[in-house]
Image (tube, rainbow, N blue to C red; front, side, top):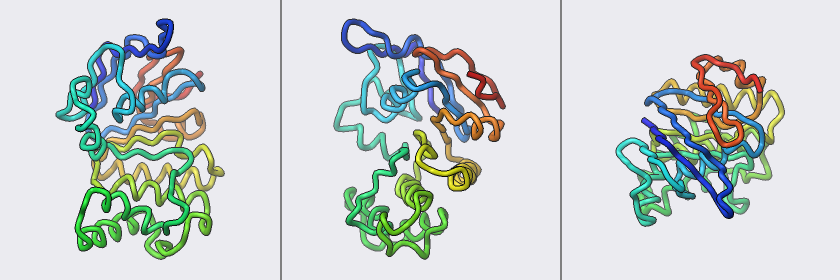
Length: 226
């Protein structure tokens, strides 16, 4: 469950980036968060993962009131939220397997658990035979699959996909969206942040439109009409 109540965000000179955002996302939903560049989508993502704090308002993620957590608690919050980005953010000198395993290694997990979990998520994303390869040796779609596998190692309740198809051709983009749909069917809440009108309209899922820092539309099985 994700709840944003009266969320505002401003930077210097009282410039409002977000204005009175009110959202409620049910567990297990798949939601498209759409809007033009600069609309405020990325700011919402940063607030959800604790990278930035709202100027005012309340943000509840599961059992966490993120407006009250300390910086020390942010890493624990992020284990509940898997995040994937447009630019993959893979470590170039590590293989795909090592990239995925690294997310567990930094948390001090045992080698036995790492082998089990990494093997499982690599199979889920269809990379069980590509783990030995380095990022530059595989396609962009396969790099994004590895990034998704890495985001899933902590079995997050929420997966935030911030423009995950932005650097991909239409074939790879559709494969990534199909993978996100599969993950959603397992019960993971998926928030797709995008400006890709074709993908959003094809999904026929809930669509939340952000414009100029405000929610201007929130429709079940909506379309991207801006």
